[in-house]
Image (cartoon, rainbow, N blue to C red; front, side):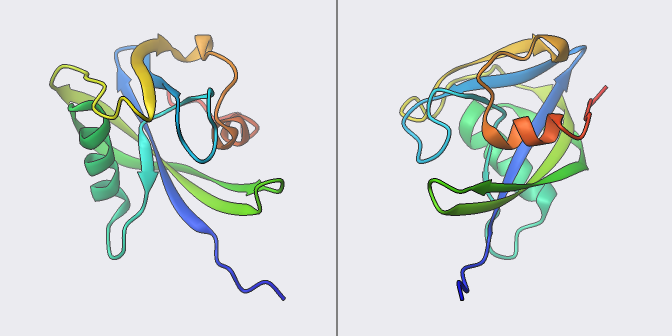
Length: 136
């Protein structure tokens, strides 16, 4: 019996007017060349809100507010033998200029309309959209 536990990921959907922030994933273990929201792994004893705030700042240099739980997905990467639970948080843009602070992991960030999400999307986001999720 496999006793491995799922890894907990955080995906942060940042709202600025009618747009969301999305970036193209580069040299990463999962989802290379797909589009994803800022995010990463939940750290030990970290709240969802603190993880969202930390990951967004580490990756983009911006500050966020009104951070709220939005949804969760159960993401089974069968080929890679990985299992993630992705916690989605929504928030509002607060301040700062968007920077690509992890150039080795991301090709760059852009603000886009929700209905114009690019493809291919990161697998957990595909699962989120199967829930008919819309942050607006």
